[in-house]
Length: 311
Image (cartoon, rainbow, N blue to C red; front, top):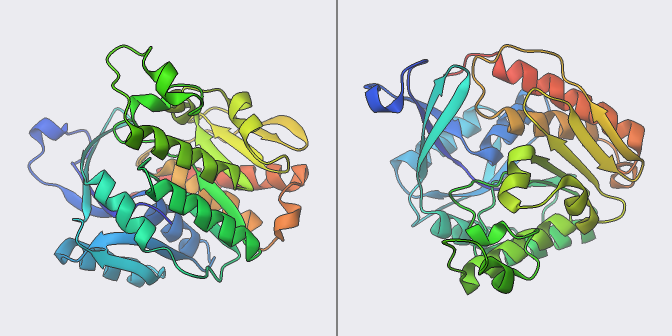
């Protein structure tokens, strides 16, 4: 569950400033993960909020055609998000047109009473007061139902407040005042704290090196905030993934790949891990050997994703 939107891609090698045609592709962390899982043969559904508009209904229909269960998609008043994407020299540039706070509140309102799933995966969560607390409670409810819970931090720099840059949300108001140019707000502080409460419910947390920079923390510091039996996986592009879990710390190297379409690689990585874990009971997710195999599968799925032309 999480963000669902349209990516509008400029032609390869053309900067957004000069693009005259844009190609529409389903996007957002939750969408990418759900569609990658469906492509891997894993039954997947999407809980997300879309606008009750042509773009929202079109996205819902396209996801259904891709084999994703859209029964928990909610159509509401917040506009369907758009993100412009340009890939130059293998690097993606983004420009978003989104209503992040409205999206977050609509997502919180769309939460189901019961999950009825083996795994509940959260991704692309905006740190909005009240909304993140509701998601943390939903994760706790999923655990009580016996679901495994995974989180992809996916901290969008433009959506996370500067207050996030203070050691994972601890002592936010006082320490945030020491950051140049930052104006702390109760909304931002509470939203960040809610995100960390969500992380603390997870059996598996995946974040990138960029996410750690946005959060203003380190891999070891974040791992200390998680459940003792949880695993933290930190990715860094084409470099080794660091796995920190009950079995200690290990690095898992990916195979080299020439990226044709790098957008969504982290979401595909999550799908690969979940595909390896979904049929295992939650109690086995703390097994170090199983998690290392899952991370290797994540690398392979991400590699196939970035080498594949889409749209």
